[in-house]
Image (tube, rainbow, N blue to C red; front, side, top):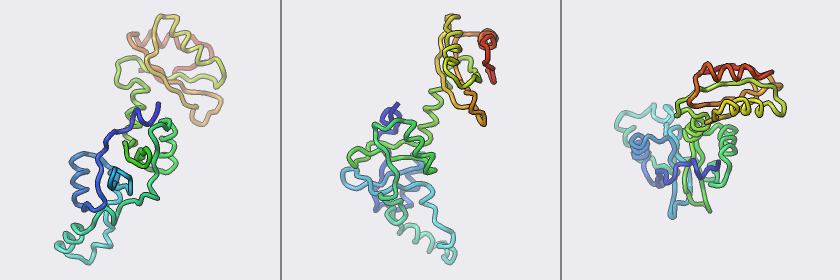
Length: 215
């Protein structure tokens, strides 16, 4: 899974000379929270987020309503945007989980995607959440089970083998280390066209594994 397969292609882009009022309007109409700021040839020069468009109240405290309106209308994106040298970006061929790690480490909600300095897309936390939903089969009917197993070789094969022996197929799966327990692993699987009780009985028959949740 690569960034290029899950990013938003042809994102809404703006120019540095656009007013912040116009940028706010575009964000509201398109329901986006990040706007790459580009110059000729779609070359990135900055990034605007909802947070960067918030003007500190201290700057407006001494102004009346007309002065505030004039002040805001005169502000351009180049005055408030995150400059290019401070924008964290990624590339189309980067693995999706690597891009997610960059976002988590830097506590940011989006990464402009560049190819030779040109903006070709943007990947956001919403894109990541949508992919997580797909990975776990959230959009497909079926029985979802979380199985806790010892963190050792062969345990996943025991689970998939027991399900395969019944002629069932696993539609989606994922796994993470058990919280605060490095000796165990939590595996989530989704199986279609099987009664919940039947799947539960099969998993409970696997030695050393425990059903944490099934629905």
